[in-house]
Figure 1 (cartoon, rainbow, N blue to C red):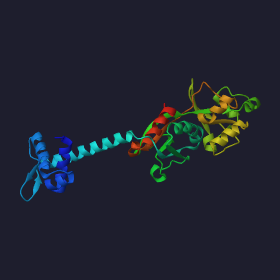
Figure 2 (figure 1 turned 180 degrees about the vertical axis):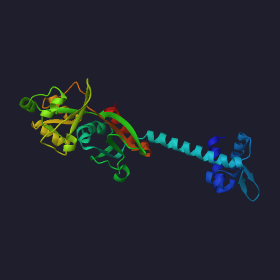
Figure 3 (figure 1 turned 60 degrees about the horizontal axis):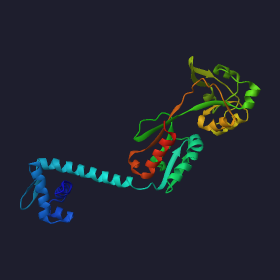
Length: 293
């Protein structure tokens, strides 16, 4: 007899209170149900059920074995379901949230390749610099930049979020090119706010530097700061993904190549129970392939 089937009959017998009820629930005769339980008892070398003409009751070992059978059957059913899910093609709507700059400059260009690879998936992208609650916002996965607080979310590390310091050729021709970070104090520097503008940190041969900077323009948007730099308003410190295209095209010039700017950790986060979804798994794997370390 099949061991798992015998376990199922035994669990039914315990939960329904009799072998005849277990037989009816399992679509077999009462004799066959009794044979399943006897097979288990013979295999284990001990009784599971004590039966009288009026009732049945579990032995001490039978109670423990019942709990173990339930857990085994649950795990088997879950594994079977997961295996079936793996065979399904990713499909349906996937709701993703990401920070504004990364989303606009990196995620959106990459999505064309993802959508081509998985034609049955539709993507709903929510770009926000707020940390959105995945459950409340109905999002299945989020790109998070910065150190993560402890939570029930699963985090998959991506490549760190790098920064660059750049200026336009026109600004450098007008104001001169700073050779060392200390020279930034004599330049117009662009940033989100006066607080963010106070010091720029970097590491060089002489160790860690914390350079005081100042400027006449602050803007609360990274794309606007890039535009300000392109129009010669000053030197800008922003994410590399925002300015790499301009650097390649010669519209911006990277400064201080011998110095390393601090990077920020970047992760893909999602709820553990959602990972069984083929569309979510496909997106996590794609992002790791495209933006992994």
